[in-house]
Structure formats: structure tokens, C-alpha cells
Image (tube, rainbow, N blue to C red; front, top):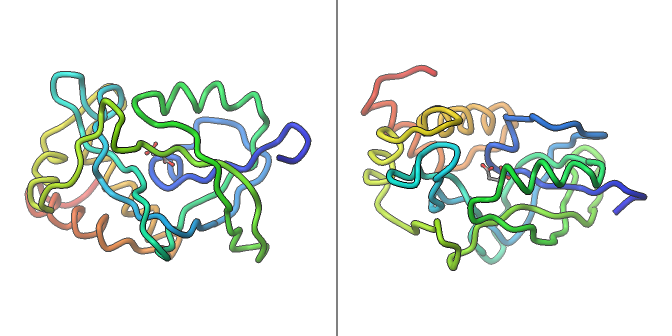
Length: 177
Ligand code: SIN
């Protein structure tokens, strides 16, 4: 924490859907986690009856997950906690800031296996078919995946899990946004 400001690491929609004010933004990474489309979305990219699939982080020794860190005022947590309310909780981490070459203490939002919306693993084809079919109040699940894949390309931070799913969904539904 810096005064009333905190670093938050984003690895999913927080990379590309920035609907909150921030003081600084840095390309960043956390170590010991891997991104997985294993979390159910009841409130954004699916519904309670037909949840979508969105990303969470799973512990993975030595794995580096790249994303974006935001320095935010403490008051912004009210918005972020609400946005991430379907199973995610804040978790304290060390965040490596690429541009500055140093590490800061911060938080990320993780949806752990014991949360009510957790879906867990499935084959890539099953996950892709699920994503191709789901949508919710924030838009289609397909858009969530394809925007994340594009954002990771833009950050030069490719993630094989995300790009495999994006390719499968585009095969199933056709290319494009
Ligand atoms: C994140 O982006 O850091 C959390 C997961 C999401 O909101 O997609």
C-alpha cells in the first residue's frame, strides 16, 4: 500500500475492460499461478441457469502469469469487489512491474476451488463449446475470450491455454470480434 493507494493485478477482463479510475498502469507479472477458464460466470458472461466460463488462477509452482497492474485508490475496491463478487476474493501477492523492474505488494482476485461458481477442468473442446454457447449481462462469453486473447497478444504475453481456446471457438463460430 502507498498512502491510500493499492496495487491490483489483473489477468482476465481486468486487463481490457477498465471501467474504474487508476493512478498508474504497468505491464506486470505474478509467479506461481496459471490462468484457467475454470470459473463459472453467473452475472457477467452467463446466467445462474447457464453459467459462462471465465478465468481464474490456479496455483502452479514457478509458472509466470503476465497481466496488468493498476495503482488504485482504496475507494475503488468497492467497485472491483462488486464486479468480481461471483466467487472471487482478494488475495495478497507480490507483483513484478515490467516497466519499472521492481516488485510491489498488491492483491489479485482469485476464484478458488471451494467457491460456489467453480466449474473446474474439462477438455479444451468442451470448454470452447461451452464458451461459444454462453452469454450474460456483460455480453457473450466468446467476446470475453477473444478480447482476452487479443489483449494478451497486445501485451506480448501469449498464454497457450487462452490461444488454444480462442482458436477452437473461432473454428466453431467463425473469426472476428
Ligand atoms: C481479473 O481480470 O483479474 C479477474 C478475472 C476477470 O474479471 O476476468
